[in-house]
Length: 501
Image (cartoon, rainbow, N blue to C red):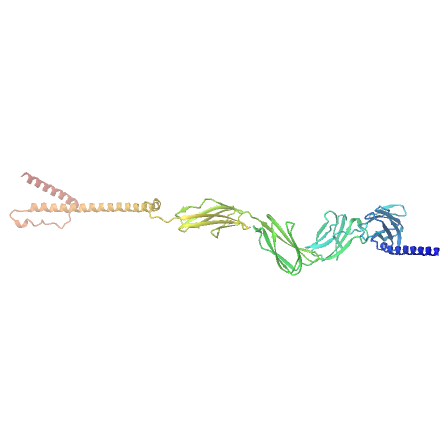
């Protein structure tokens, strides 16, 4: 009886052990794994696969051949993150490196693993291979920015990346570069290219099959949308409106001088207006429409933000001026001004910035406003009140007016003097002629009287008043004058005698 009970006890213990083993074994089956592919270009007698693990956890590494047959395996030493596995008689081709965790209680993904191969041929020549496993590149993106292909990533551990851009139709490699620091590659494509293939391989994985990525991309069409701005080059406003007309869903990003100004992940179809803030001076505005494949299409506008008013200098201060004239001449200079207005009348600005304008005045006060405006709309203004006085009645001699008529007066006086002189000369001649005629008449009269007296006879009274007979014959002037003298002499003699008596 005693032995029977002990036997039953042992059977129960053995059963419990078996059950516990069955319960625990599935944890090992669910181990995390990672497969890497290595390509050998030649045949080697011996290849040593050197594996660098992501951490010191226990790992099992298995090398598989072309038919997934197991060629060799190994495990890392506790606390070590490297191990080596040797394979004999390696033929050229692809080999798979299978890595899995051992006795892990979780399914944490295996991190970055690198593999290098050291091989020897029959000649015992050692070959140091640079073949390494492919690395997963964090946040790798490929998209188009206008007609440029863009490749970017954020992985800090990937190191150098080899990038080839291939014309899919011609199989021509049109661009090849190795990039590390910028994590960004942008290359402009010719308009004749319609499709490209982008090959992206970490430099450490060069030569490893399936190490990189090959992406075939069609050149995208223009977006079904439009972007427009007001037709201006200068402004004094702090922002400028941007008008969007979208016929599909798009994201929108705006940049000012290459600095992100605003971003919208998604805008619905329709019309939208965005205000873009400006900086002082030149603003190069770029608006990107982003489609569902992250392709970006740009519209660019350059605007000068100017808030400084132009310089306006007036030659004289006209404010408060008074004048009898019916106009005033305005002069001045402007700088950095495109337009000049005087009381809403545009005035021409000379090449050197000067201006001259004759402004008509009405009687009384005249408000004159001079405004200089630049291309941004900034203004400089000068205002003056000029008074035109009423005309006064002349109470004295106005020498200015007299001076106008002096030439005419001199001419009139000269003509008058000449006329008077001619008139006097004519009158003198007439007087001389009259005097001569008078003398002649007097002489005739005296001669006649003398003749009468001589011919008087006392006895014959009837003949006293009878005039002396005259001859019809014309007497010469010399004779008349001599006779007149004789007559006067006779008359005078008689008068003297009479007085004596």
